[in-house]
Length: 284
Image 1 (cartoon, rainbow, N blue to C red):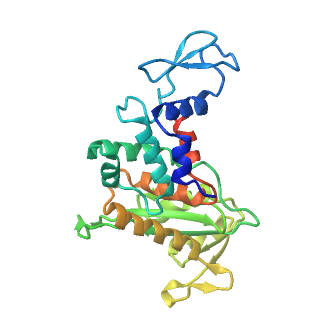
Image 2 (cartoon, rainbow, N blue to C red):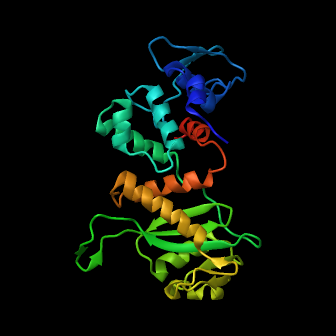
Image 3 (cartoon, rainbow, N blue to C red):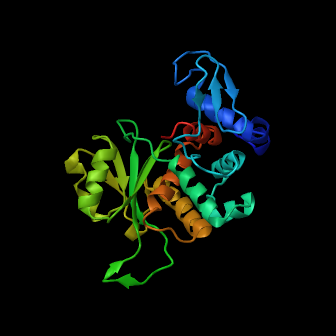
């Protein structure tokens, strides 16, 4: 259940160990050039690559990964990924800058690339025995003024199975034309759906869902099994982190930050660092 820094340091003591880990995660003992299984890899002196023992051709495992063309130490990359895996409230670029001793521009790029590893998996929620809670929220913003009569706050829609997985996405609005297609795409028909009394959700029963609401405007938050406390708890953790760690997030990159918190929630029962390192070796 835990993956500590002591374990990380023992497994990845230097750049060479990190490079070999990327090689093994990406190719194992099969050469991508000749296709022979059970080859031995010989490191190339002065380069981030290996030679196949069978065909003598060069293999560069960092090509087409998030580490491509980076002059930053590979161990620093791995340590940044470890920090992301254990930080409950996220890791800012300024924190990486201070910890790794790199420039802010380098730290920001590293953080952006690591978040690419956390893209949401494609799956549907719900089913006969898996009730789903849905809700919408807004990303916290330091800009409360309006421009041309429209709020600058960014809308986010989410759905979560109780004791299960969550999905969340940055949407252009919280209107019916936006949210209803998202619900139908991500939640299996026939699922019991819990929500508040937001008007957009009133047609869910006609769309093939079993729908139950709680009336937040009347201070009703739980009625039997009906509540949205699970998704509200997810929103609370995400918004506190966005506001406390990152302070302000551009709408252009908001989905990447949402993906990060979705990923950490969905993999909350296992050590996250090995999963991220495996993904880092196979991202094309």
